[in-house]
Length: 394
Ligand code: AMP
Image (tube, rainbow, N blue to C red):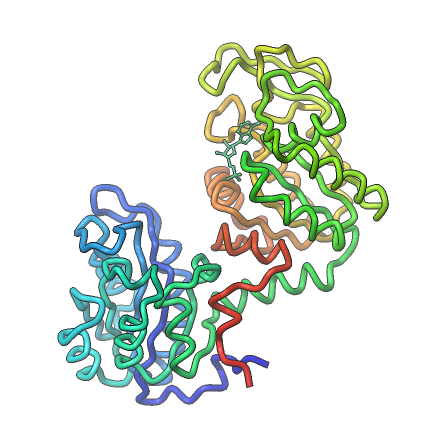
């Protein structure tokens, strides 16, 4: 068993927290502070236990170079507002003499935010020198950046080999939610998959075939499945390399008595910018110069039957090009239908679905919205997360 955060004595200890403060910024201003707010339970707990809290995170992709555009200074300013009774300091470097001096000066119950870890080239290379420098700053390591937990970086992975480590409350909640639904789901268990990149989701579908009762497939990825059973898809998105595997998945689903439900109609247009030319076509009837860009109204009705009866739902990937008003109905309808089912545990993950749900104002009608796109896909694939599996177990 991994030692939980509650099992550590943090009093007067230097604790390095790897957070995910990769917040959206516009002209240096934070446009959503959700990621900072979600980190507060772990930070407040450690501060209450009188730990000397040293926090690090990445922001954007500065590629190992200092780039002011990606400074964590705006995060520091927001943290000061969110923790008004805590002494908070900002270190303009990640590691080095200044960071060491500032960390050494911290008192129990105070917090130091380091600059963007990706300003260091060694971060993404999991460089031993950077790992050693991190290890000198702290006595205990707390991993709480779920969104990066599938990555083997110095501040997410390398450091956990050196210091006594645990996961924070955010990661703990994500892991427990996915473990509960995948190991012990209330049935019927329905998975809803969509989005464009079918290659990212093949392993998810394969793993879910052993867990769920039904898989509803929409989005761009449904067309490779339709092509696999010789259906006409017009000019819709198809990944030719994945047709064979989709066919095998359909056969395996039949053997395992898992229902794979594909759309029966589509909102189509010549391309995603052809907003004026949208029309609904039945399955098999999409003209050769048009692509399916959203699921149609009959499909929403069909999916509704399964969503209504479900007792567990996991959802990854939008049903259509939800970024455009004319192609967002499928995704919005599915989100609303899930929200209406009050008897169901609903878990949504993946950047696009999460931002769609947030835009529709439906966040509160889900049991859990995952903070990690790639990481949640890995869990749905039944795989371990690198940064979590390295945390010491005794
Ligand atoms: P993914 O990262 O694989 O989850 O894909 C998300 C993207 O899929 C979003 O940007 C959607 O606009 C896009 N998408 C959803 N449905 C379709 C579709 N039918 N055709 C093309 N792209 C789609």
